[in-house]
Length: 149
Image 1 (cartoon, rainbow, N blue to C red):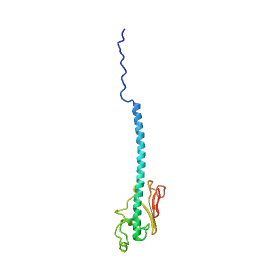
Image 2: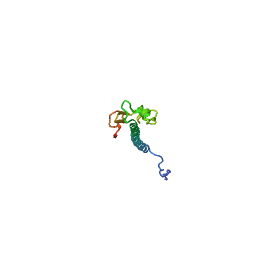
Image 3: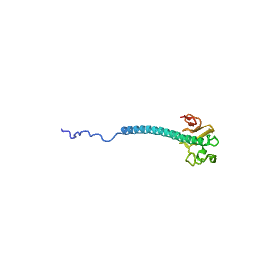
Image 4: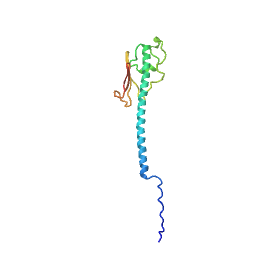
């Protein structure tokens, strides 16, 4: 008797199994999560660098103000004196603003820069990413240079 059924060679497997697809998805999610962490870290560094750059601009403007007015603005005068012609402009001949802005810029976290000043020195700072004054992440410039993170 002859066997009427002939064996066919096993067909090659086509497509992916569910396990293989899930494994690839897990790998993609892990890689995406890692990329997100790196992007957030880069954004934080960019914000800190932007704040430092703005503080350096204030520092330059304050030095120019001090040269013209023979003193730094006091805390009560604040940084606002940098965007309007000086009050003593008639006496000094200075008619230009020290910052070319119509309003004071905010830090990258949308907070006002803080300022303390006296006739012989100043301190300007951003409260940093945590938006809390007096913490380790504050970015500070003083009349003697940059301090803080």
